[in-house]
Each structure stands twice: as structure tokens, then as C-alpha cells.
Amino acid sequence: ELRRRAAALAGDEAILALALGAEELLGEAAEAAAAPPEPEEQAEEPTLLHVRVDHMNRPRPYVKLLDAWGAELGMSGFCILPRASRGGGGSGGRVKDVHVVWTEAGAGAAAEFLRRLRTEVVDVNARGQPCKERMATALHQGAPPPPEEATQRRRQPSAPPGGALEVLEMARGERRALLESWGLSE
Image 1 (spheres, rainbow, N blue to C red):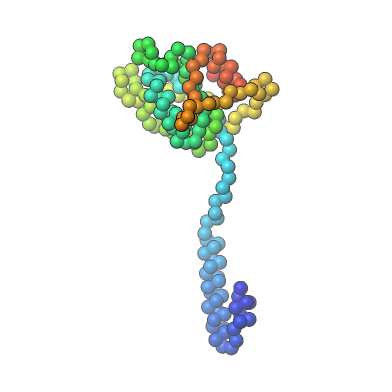
Image 2 (tube, rainbow, N blue to C red):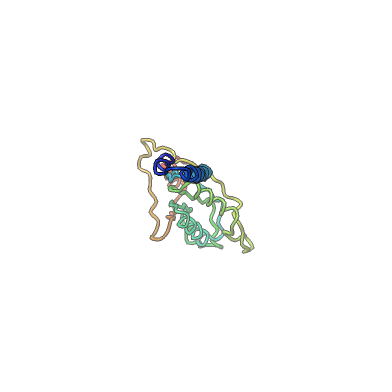
């Protein structure tokens, strides 16, 4: 660029114009070197997140909140409730040993889900007071285990329209088989 400008100039004025042009070009080069590089768009690696929730005192609103978070975070998966507990019937509707499996999540979404689970009100305690989740355990977080021949037919979640979480009601043996099909354990 500097040579092109020099060729177009003649005489003493050319030297001044050439020096000013060089200063301008050097300034632009310094700005370009100091600017942070443009971040490259790269697809986030898929993450599978398996969380065991010890208990839910009010399962309907709890699961509805998890579903909303999943939709907001672009995740999809399923929630496995013990058989005959889905409606929250009986004395207070408390259910135990609930498994939430996000089969399609980015690493950032999975981390945000776990953060929310620990820091935001999700349920009520035995006295009916709002509480945060303290009894959940992340059993798996990372790349989905590769399917083995025996588990090639993984059940894919099919959430209701507008939802992210399919709610399943299963006996323990059925739950174990579903989790094993994803390479997970209870």
C-alpha cells in the first residue's frame, strides 16, 4: 500500500505525504493486532446429564419447573417417576428416587441447569415452605456413553409440544432397563 502511494507522488510534498501515509497504515496495523480475534463459531459438544433427585414433595410443579428450564436452555430429555406417583396423589404427593436424564444438552446448559437446581427454589419442604434442592446427585455429566450392541435401541425422549422433558412413570425394573440403554446406572 505504501509503495502504491509513493509511486503516485512526486517532489518534496511526496515525502511528507508518504510519511503521513506510513503513520496511518502503521496505526491501522497496530489496532488490528491489538483487537481480540473474532471468536469462531463452533458447535458445542453434546452432553448427557443424569441427575437423581432423592425426593419431590410436590412433583407436578417441580417437574413443570424442570421442563421450563430445559426448554429455556435448549435441552431435551426425560424424567422418570416411580409408578403410580405421577399425579401426586396420596398423602401430599411426595415421590422418592426420581431420575432426570437430559439426553440432548450442551455443556454450558447442563452446568446452568445444575446451578439453578442448587440455587433456586424448586419444591417445598415438609412444612410447606419453599426450598432449594439439596438432595440431588449428578450421576453422569459428559459425553453420552457410546451405545453397545445390546443397547442400540435407546429410547429417545418425546416431550410434549412446547416442552423439553418427557415424563415417564415406571417400575424400578423398567427404569433400570431404560437407564442401561443409555449406558447409565441407578
